Structure formats: structure tokens, C-alpha cells
Length: 217
Image (cartoon, rainbow, N blue to C red; front, top):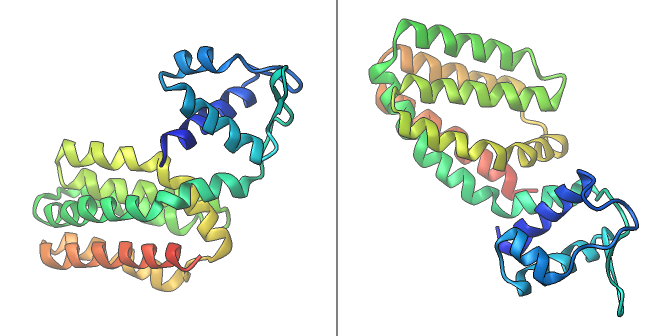
């Protein structure tokens, strides 16, 4: 994600947090640049981005003012979808290897957690946000079963970046329940059976399908 877009998100977050209420003037470029640790040109670009979404308005000779404290959700979705393919590529590298290791290293406690998180995932389909969170818990359980703290940390860095994009994708294109659940159940059985190659293949196939669904949006 471009630096200016990240700065725009931070400005929007601060606006929504009440740092600059509706109708108030933002600090000048120099002040904002110092606060955010970026250059003035980056601040200027971020302001233009928010102005294009109706959140800010520049008044000649008077500064930049807050004209809205909210933005259409689709804009947030677009920001995240712009990088989601790259995130899924990184997830594939991490999770397919973790699945391979999990099949070699899993313990009875790991298997219990995998089955519990899969059941929770299957029971959460009625609410998309809950479903995404339980799906994340399942995949994190696979990482935990690999018993590699570095891989687990890497996975945790992906979660905030992909959650909203996953929600947006499922609202527009719900995943087929039966085939999706079967794929996750199959991954558990491969891990239970110590079939490391199959576990890696199933993990990669699932994320490839996820990437294709995003690309089709």
C-alpha cells in the first residue's frame, strides 16, 4: 500500500476518533508531517486522497477543513483489495509450509483445537464477520500445530490487513459452504494422518482458490 494511502487512513482514523471534529481545520502540512513522520508531499497527497472522498476540503487561504467524519465502506475495501493478492501470496508461502510441519509435529491437543475451531467456523456462517474471525482462528490453529513461533508471528501480521477485504469479498461472493468446509476438514485429516505433502497441497489449493475469488471481484 502506498505511503500516502497509509497516511490517509491514519488521518481518517484520527478524524473519526475526534482529534479534528466536523468543521475544524487540520494542522498545517509541516505540523502533520512531523506528527506522522513523513514528508510534506506525502501529507499533501494523503489530504488530496481524503478530499476526493469528501472527508476534507481545502479552502484557499484558510487551510484544510473536515467536511465529513465517515467515508463509504467501499473505499476502505478498495484500499485493502489493492494489496490483498500480495498478502495471499505471502500467506500461501507461510501457511502451506506450516501445514507441512503441522502434519509432522501435531500433538493431540493441536488436533483437538483444530476440530474445535473448524466446528466454530462451520457454525458462524450466518454472520460474515464472525465467520471470517472463526476462519482466521482455524488457520491460526494450523500454524500453532507447526510449533514454529516465527511462522506464527508472520501469520499474525497478515490478519489486520486481510480481515476487511475478506468480509467485502464474502458479501459480494459467498463461498460455497459444502466444498469449502470439506477442504478444511480434509486438511485436518491430512494433518492427523501425518501426510505432510497432502497437507501442504490442500493448504496451497485453498489459498489459490481464495486468491482467484479476489481477482474475480
